[in-house]
Structures are given as C-alpha cells and as structure tokens.
Image (cartoon, rainbow, N blue to C red; front, top):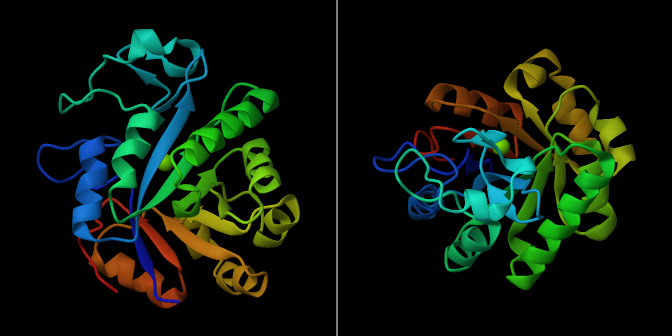
Length: 228
Ligand code: MG
C-alpha cells in the first residue's frame, strides 16, 4: 500500500485557519490528502465537540455544558465546532476522517463517549469514512465491540502491536520516536494485519524516510510537504 498523508488537526497552517476548525478540514480536502485528523471531547451534557486541549477560554470542556461553550471562538475567530457541525461539513468533502476520541474521566465515561460519537457518525451517514484513534484502551475496546469492521488504532507506545491486536485494535498509531526505537514494529504489525500510522511526521525528508520504512499513514502538520 502507498503511504497516505493525514493532516494533523486539519490543514491549519494555511493562512486564516487554526487547528481543529472547519476551515482546517476544508483546507485538507482542498489539498487532496487522504484524511484529516481531529479530536473529540464530550461536554458535561454529552455533546461531542472538536478541540485538542482539555480546556478552552478557561472552561474545562468535559466539565462544562455545551450552552456555555458553543459561542467560544478559536484563535482565527471561528466558533468551536460541535461534532455535528464538523460531520455536516465533512459530508460534502472528498476526504477521510480520522477521529480521535480523547480520554474521559472514567472507563464508563470513555465507553459513553464512544457510543455517543458512533451514534452521531451513523446519523450523518459517514460510518464508512471514519477511522478511529485513541490513547484510551476502554474507548478502543468499545469501538471494536460496536464497530468491528472499522479501523481503530492505539496512539500510545506502551503496548506492542501483538498486545494491541489481542485487546481489539487493528492498527497502531505511534509517535515517530516509538517507531524509531522499535523498527521491528513495522513487520510485526504487518504480520498481524494491522495498519501502521505514525505521528507527527513533519517535513519532506522525515515523511519520505518513514514512508520508505513501511508506514501506511503519516499524520503531519505539513501535509503539503510531500506527495507519495
Ligand atoms: Mg489528535
């Protein structure tokens, strides 16, 4: 398989955009890359919203009701997108969606986040266009239980590919340093039928190096730097 590029938090380096915004998603689609990655938290009243950091403008997203967050603006003046707004925009765009489920406070809350997110994805009719990623084991298990045909990759490097396969993941999505320290993971993952995604790989030289090493996907802040 040819290496595919994923814009990390969208293609936000384009002027006027910012991370995890609707414009960063549209920019990634305009660029013609394989996918756009984004981060999802549940608010205290169970509305999935898109943001990287756990807080925005002094509000802890997971402890705040959506009504208090919905008019807050990102650095470029766009409002913080809800998952509904994001998927509504994405529906019209020719790009895959790499959905990161952020860790929540308890195992049950992590599973609940997955159920609410998958419901939204189904409602928008984009099930086939989503690849899931997470640092949370409970969230990953819940994705594989509810959507066994979907791709779900683990972001932390503290388990081996074989251990993650056993848990229910079908991909690894490791930091570039983890892959450099464990070059055998490329082969191990391939033998297990798992995909290999690497974050965050920036600049043409690094992107080419990891593509040659056998990455299926590269998640990058410089998605325009390299075409494969
Ligand atoms: Mg992310």
